Image: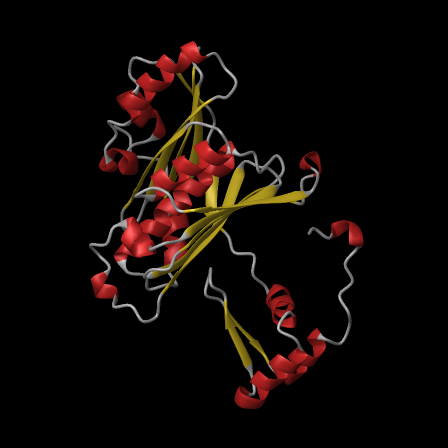
Length: 308
């Protein structure tokens, strides 16, 4: 068998059925997202699963020219998971970045055996579709906020897609130290109910997949293994990579939101303002001259670009 091609999204359909699917395998993308952070293993797995899921959903929700952001906000040991996935117009590649935040009072040695629900506590799931650069979708941003329902990230996303998007979806996610993988099946809407037998049969077959198979096999081999008797059409792969959009300018604009008085107060205490990017851990510094320059001229935004 061929080992999986890393850092690729694969789309596939089952001929003469109501079912379509996506499959993703992340290697260097996942490793790069982790390399500047010392997350405990259970957090690495959760972040990897959400990264794989974000690519699957971005391909499904048609965010070309925009971004999909998935957030899990928890009240347990895990305070925040964020994954941002971007697709440029007519691009064959997908870029993404991810970060996690833990309760700084928690003993990380106590986390390993916690379930997803225990790790998050009573939390909420936030999904944002940022299509402001996509004129075909009216240059809009959409956001959904729902309580976390489900005992895993996959179950949480399945529940969201069914309740909020009215689309039946099944998701399988797996993650180890170096690879995050996922597979998604989706029942196309507005089709005759008698075709539900196909959906049930294909879902049953997909549910036989094992973690090691999802992590190690190529898309071709995995589809053949699971759906050997089905007519599956696999499309060309899209590359996925880690990319962080942080810059001195974007960090400066963020600092401006704190106000000049607050920044001057920090400078009086420390002589310099230091900021590390949550995604790539790049270090930024602003001294008194830099800070003054942030407020030297008003940033003018055309009214047509504002979104409320």
